[in-house]
Image 1 (cartoon, helix red, strand yellow):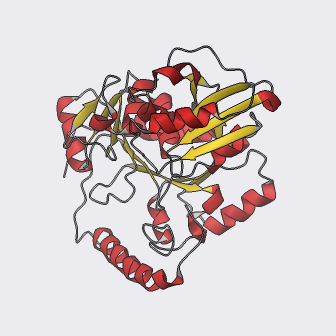
Image 2 (cartoon, rainbow, N blue to C red):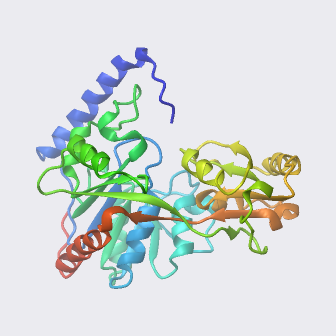
Length: 359
């Protein structure tokens, strides 16, 4: 996301802020009804446009909870071509499911993954068709006020904190930052691993969480690269000899590019829009750019999310032995992992045995 702002858009942002504020007022005062469900529902979301790390945090929760409970993940399925409620399996396509739900389904085959633009209908369908479900994770649903989740997690990017942003379209906020009070837990994502205690205290003061809220800091963890197809393991042990063609279609590729520049001296970046659906002609551009790399050891590298879409290209046979992706995860800073895990699992454990659904 660009930090450059057009001041001419500021009046429009005031109007947008009034509209979203009035909408939230209607829900807060219960003039507009919101549905609550007896089953534990955990919402993971943000109030800004652009990537804050929702998918790796959703995956973290899926891995944490599926050890003890029957987990379902419900997503909108952004940019899918299908409609209505759909169960996502590892055999689904991006067009059917969207890239992020498909990534989660392939990573966690034991969890139920479903998509539905209407989250209320999606939850009811899951409860009806899969009554064994014990907890539902709502991916990117903080603004979906038609549902009142039992537990809400709000994410804010360390590099562009929501407290320093402005309303759309002048800034990147979808709604006023005061609405962070709806969250049970706030996570400052993509934090530096070497963040100082002073920096952390200043951010905590700036966010000014309520007494009932918990505040955590997480960093991005890049795991060992994996071949997108059946190729040998790459060797990034000598950056001075390594060249990388970086192919991305995500909202903010800068952190990933910064990381790749630590493992390769020559880095050429092909940057596409967020959730970009790769076309067959893109394979020619990728191949040509890869050929031009001068390093003796060279790879095509992409993000985990992009790899789901890139894999569906049918004319990249000649490049299959050169394409790799880096799976990512999260680490909780300052040894707060156990506190977060306990907070979430206790919520599910205390609420999973209710048998009444309202709404």
